Amino acid sequence: MSEQGWKDFLAAEGVDDWVVLHGGASAVFRVASLAEATRLADVVARVPGVAGAGVLLTLGDDRLSVRLTRDLWWLERRHVDLAREISTRLGAHGAVADRGLVQEVQLAIAAKPEALDVDFWRAVLGYAAMSDDNAVDSLGHSSTVWMQELEPAKPLEHAMHVDVSVAREHIEGRLAAALAAGGRIVVDSNAPAGWILADRAGNRVCIAAWPDGATESAAADQL
Image 1 (cartoon, rainbow, N blue to C red):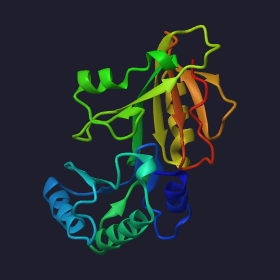
Image 2: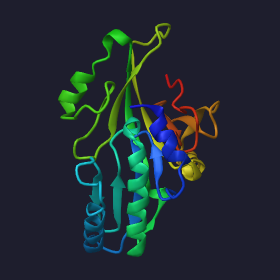
Image 3: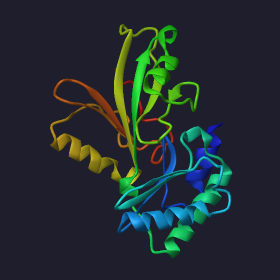
């Protein structure tokens, strides 16, 4: 587990269909029907190296989602080859990737180091461990939970916020939609890699394109 895996993926050629966010590398292909999604899922399953690699497929009436890993830090060189081959085979069947459909939503639970309790959240949600500081839905349907350490100088003892990650070319569109819906910008020091927004009640959310469109994390101080 290291940064090198996802950095190599982002630098690779032939993976334009794929978006690298905090949940790893994913691609979403538009389909005409659930039956077509099922056929294409079988195509993916037959790619050498996919079986047993932890790839997650999600099928719907209008899309097939392919996630190579459940965590950014698990990306390796072999995932570049898998991504290329999956895109090639699906492209041969007429499937078209839509990077605008790829996103990650994460619940960040912040607390002082001595109060971080990832085991509780894994237990209460029925989630599995992927990294030391997170919990993931084994079915792949729900948001990841990430445990964030509050700095010792913070007056808060605990807090929560939401992280939303999208492809780099879609982050400003998502920002505009959120502002049009009544949101307001709280912090823009990391723009255009990310913004911290709030709703009318003051609840905060970070919209970021990390690491797809940034070399540093845009999940800045939220609290």
